[in-house]
Structure formats: structure tokens, C-alpha cells
Length: 445
Image (cartoon, helix red, strand yellow):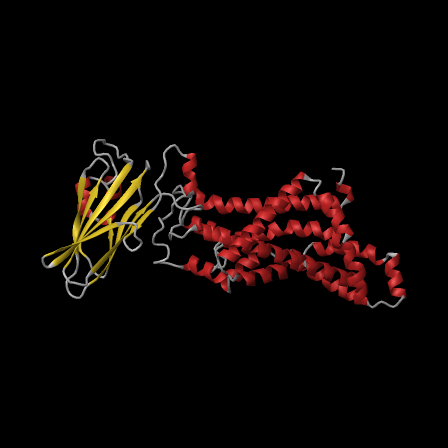
């Protein structure tokens, strides 16, 4: 315990190690927040969800914070609904029918155009469908008749698909409704817009509810992907998944390798010979290629990949390094003393051989973690990641498959890539400092 305290105090003498520890602490805090705020099953359900969950999110929208770095702000998504009380609704009874006037007030302080304008209608009736008419009112008082239609129990209206409205405006509706008509080049006009919907019902108990979604070009902290999913889900949940994979793989590999090396060194003979031959064969096996084959022909389950990673890494080059150290420890006087008082083989291995090498494997363990984090991300980028889990590598794979870089969606690739680089940097900084502490030859460097 005193040795650990002393080592930790020495670690704090390195500014790089402090920076690495701070980053690791933040990553662990983010992982804990993800686990608490979004349960495991809920995260999987959200990530795999389709229609109905992400309908109010724009498609491939950049993070909202990019507006802080732009001279011209891109529009954010606006959602107004009669059921939530964010739209003004009045009812007027007339002969044989009821007139519902619904007014959507839209504050639009943006320079760009929205992606789309969609109206979701829901109504109740027995025989006669409600009939609605739509009027768009611009900040300068112009009124644009958007048309009329009869609606069913559940109906959607997409402005971009209204060919008649597009001919009237002379451009795609999501631009024409906001553009200055006096300019040849479309330029969005800032100000207060209104959408007035007049719905006529012809039965006493008939109702009409409307939700208007004006899809923006930016959304949330992390943006969205091609399926309108909020990338923040994958960025948050990717943190505990990556840290767990890296830590478990590093621990499983390091501890198992150390014990196997100690067993082979202590028993020697044919036991050591078999271990060395297995190690030499394993060193020439294509590690990544084997994992790719398993993912292609069997399963991409992340826990299977974790087990195979540990299994293929146990008989690595580290066994020979540990063996050379154990050969020296084996001849130490205290080991001879343990033999003299009758200690059995396993007691000597666990109590006298292994503890001597622990200070040397701690730096190696810490620096191994980002290696396995990058390994999992690499498999996901190659399309061999667990399809049910939202991870950083899966984000990059989706971005690559949908031409993110070619279409200018740089945030889609950069966000998970930066997190991977920060994770690798943090553990490397701490690992290098620990190496200096536990390896006297490096202290003067």
C-alpha cells in the first residue's frame, strides 16, 4: 500500500500524467452518466428505432454549436403542436360545420433555409373527412396560399413534395416560403412567420390536431445521422463500451499472460517448451485477419470479439519478456528460502514470482487499453462491429457508408474520431509517466 501511495505521489509530479488522469476521470464520469441516464436496453432500443422515435429530428444535421463559429446562423428545428399548446387554436360554429383556425407563430432569426416543412394531421370522424386550407404569412405581410386537402385519421403533408406549390413559388417550397421575392438569388428573410391552417369538420364530435415540424440544418449537441438518430446517444454510450472493452481486454491479456509465463518458468522442461512453441506459432498468426474471419463467418457480438481478442493475445511476445524476468526471480534467495520451508509450487508462483513483476506490468497494462479501444473501433469501421450497440466505431462506419465526407458532413466522422484520439492520448500520457516511475533507467530522460 505504501508503495502504491508513493508511486501515485511520483505520478503527480508529471504534468502530462495529470492531464491524462483528468481526461480519464472525465471519460469515466461520462460513462457513468450514460449508464445512469440511459439504461443499456433503452440505449439499444433508441439506436435501433426507426419511424416514430426520431421523426422530429432533421436528417444529417450538424451540431447546433457550429453557429457560434459562423457569421450566418443555420436554422434549428422548430416543433409546434396543438396537443402541446404551442399553437393558437380557435373554434367557430357555423351552419352544418365547425371551423377550427390554428395559427403557428414561427420566430425565424436565421440566414439559411430549413430542410423541410412537414405537417402531421390527426383527426377523428365517422364518415365525413375534415377539410383543411393552409396559408403562409411572411414577415412583410404577404400571404401565400399553400393549398387545401381532405385529411384522414392520420395524414402527413410534406411541402417539398407539393408540385403545385413549387410551380407557384418558382423554387422548392422550403426555400420559396422564406426567400426574398425581389432577389434573383434565394436569400432567407429573417423575422416572424405565421402558418394559418383552417380546418372544417362536418360532424359534431369530429376533432383535428396538427403538429408542424420545420426541420433545421443543425440539431442538438452532436448532430444527427442519415436515419435522423441523435448522435449524442452513440457518443455517450460509446464511452462505457469502449472503456469496458479496452480495460477487460488489457486486464485479461496481461494477467493471464503473466501467470502462464510464471508457470512455464517455474516448472520448466516440457511445460515451458509447450508454452514457448505455442507462443512462437501465435506470433506469426494474422491477429486482425482471424478476428475479421470470425466476424464475417460467425458473429460480430462484441463479447465474443472480446473473448477472442484475449485468447489470441495471451500467447504474445510479452510471455518471452516476462519469462526472462521470472528466470532471474526464480534464482533469488527468498525463493530458495520458500522452497526450504516447504512452500508448494502454486504458493511460490502466486506469492513470490508474480508480485515481483507487477510494478513492471502496470505501465504496460495502462498503455494496452487504448490499443484494444482502437481495435474495437477498427473492427466496427470495417463493418464487423456489434450491430446492436451504439459505439464510436459504428458511427464512423455509418458515416463512411453514407458518404459523409463527400457530402460535407465532417462532424459525423470528426466527433467519434476526436474522442478516440483523446482516449488514446490520455492513457498513453499516464502509461509513459508510470513507465518512468517503475523503470529506473527512464527516470533521467
